[in-house]
Length: 94
Image 1 (cartoon, rainbow, N blue to C red):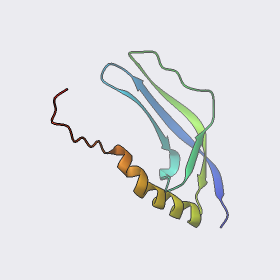
Image 2: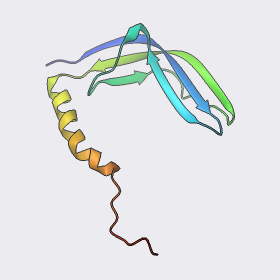
Image 3: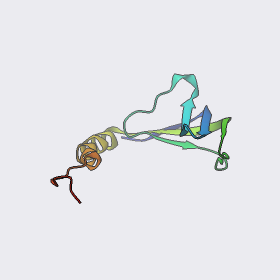
Image 4: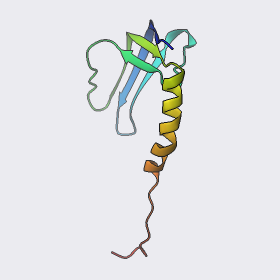
């Protein structure tokens, strides 16, 4: 019923190029966030100029979700998935 939090080192990879705009956080020790878990990366915001990429080492706090939070996230995800659909009943003419 209680939340469990712990701090772990992590690697941040940010790329801002013509081909890609992406950011990834990889937690050390093979730790994988689960459903409903929260990850807070500590430190100042990262800004990467266009055409560059950056790799940083930081600390992150992982807060594991309890049973009810996991159940709530699974329930909500069934309804939020429909936001990704685009449905149109037009014949294509404007």
